[in-house]
Image 1 (cartoon, one colour):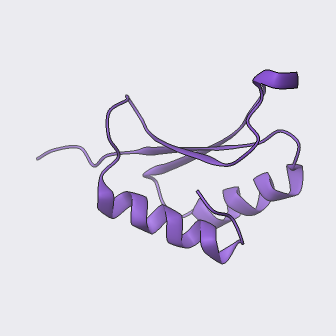
Image 2: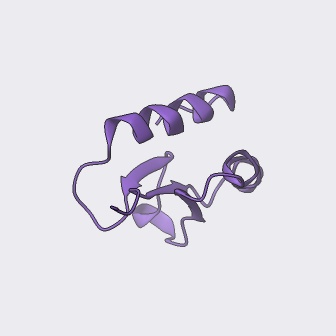
Length: 77
């Protein structure tokens, strides 16, 4: 049995209320981890990013699930 792919969602540090909403939206999905970007100045994220844990391409089905849930929050990823 293979391990299900996991996904990392990085939320910009400049929008703390969005971070709270995204964490709540994915709280019941163990495949999705949400982190607030801790980088500052020009290095910090300016948009929500969605990545495969461990690198490589993200499974299209998981990407669709994540993108749809983010859209319900008004976020494009």
